[in-house]
Image (cartoon, rainbow, N blue to C red; front, top):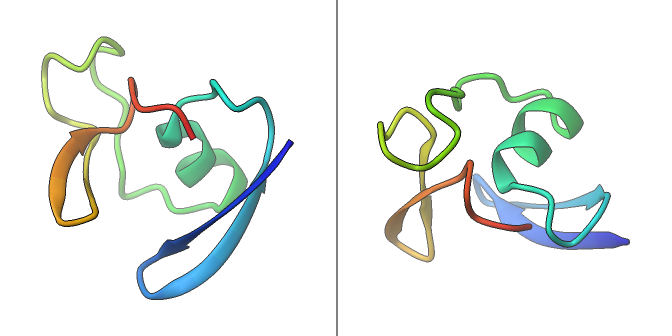
Length: 63
């Protein structure tokens, strides 16, 4: 399924399962590798991004 959202001020569309982590959409589908994979369970904070002004762990946040 395709999901559209704003990323860094521009609208982007990613394809994949709705339960796919935001981290993989950002890194693999959009090619933005600044967001890092760390522990995969949201504990270390390496994957932190801002979502609606709040910090979230993108490895455990579904698209």
